[in-house]
Image (cartoon, rainbow, N blue to C red; front, side):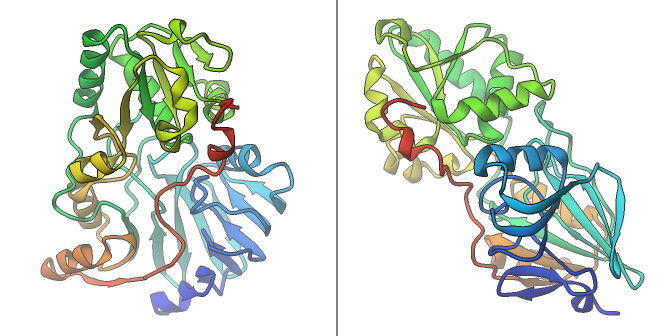
Length: 345
């Protein structure tokens, strides 16, 4: 059996014909296996969804109770036979509940990484290396320029700015699922004990993280806070809110943005960010190449990102590789932020 007989590319994304399912499909399908709850991977409208409990819970928060016809939770390390294939979910280290999906059939193992990072994150299970015959890897930051560095150093930069400008509010743009909670946890680990304010779009997901035992310290909603009260404070908000009318409630705000894309200074300037924080929930160039090599896979399929650069790197290291060119994956969007601009609800 060839890898292409197990997983193949279809208009809806990666499909397993022998197992009767798709992985992170880009359109509604009968049975979907979902790696994590970011909206470019987890869409509503599938007949049935198999995912970790956290991913299912987060999808309900984002899409409502009836986001799929049926759901089934699977634990990390648990194997399940679906028709002619066996699937196992392994931690991906991307966000809470994120998983790599190993598919085995005909004596071959293919691992679909979803999004992943290979560094410690106090808000989710750490990435687990799974040896395989074929590795399907993301390539969001697959260029040598993207080396994220120490997130602790970026948090220290933010805290220095807070100390330097005690009369100003600091707004930290971060994706509402995963990044925001990680930034809060990093701030707490660095000794920042003051209350942290939340944009309304951040509240439900952040409180869900707390319900799963992730300690984030004292959190307060922005709504109802007086402008003077917000001087010297820190607020987490969706990136889109940084340039919105909503931001006018803050005294002389300093705009920060936590993202791997902040390595590109021109991008920070274009988005009106004065304090770029290079903190990413995706593996950087070194993380991607190290992971690809460590899986032991002889064949690499590359998806969503800088595919050509990673395919070239694989070829120069004796690995068979090809891009999948799937349309529909990209940066995690913030579907719930734009409508909440003025109230932060």
